[in-house]
Image (tube, rainbow, N blue to C red; front, side, top):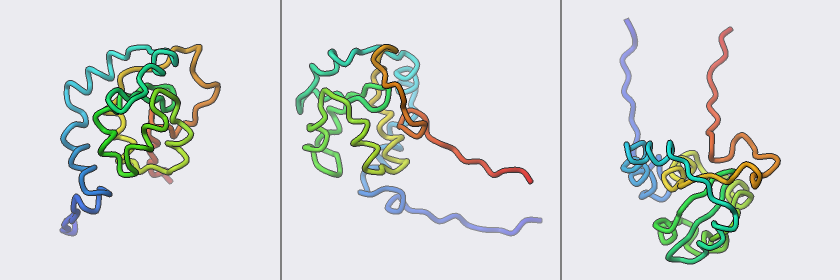
Length: 140
């Protein structure tokens, strides 16, 4: 017989600011999102560079292209942070800030495609947004 316990959490604990987790929860892993990931379009850096405004904002993180237009005004650091990298590669900036796992998973909602093989960086760290690290306990 096990020991009974309760799990207590609040959305406030899981999201900073409070809108991030509910927004993530509402949109993450929907059928539309799954289809979007599975039908991965290819965009060159030149094509991405044409989407560099507040009303049309694409960024590159790792090997992937994200249309963050709808998120520009909701970014916790302000729109100017995303607009600084609009149409370009935001990988180093994204990684240097130390975004939460929630923010990383939320970004996947905006994924619209990938870079072609020949335009991908020589080295992309495993922890970049594309694949979250998962640690499992070791069997002893």
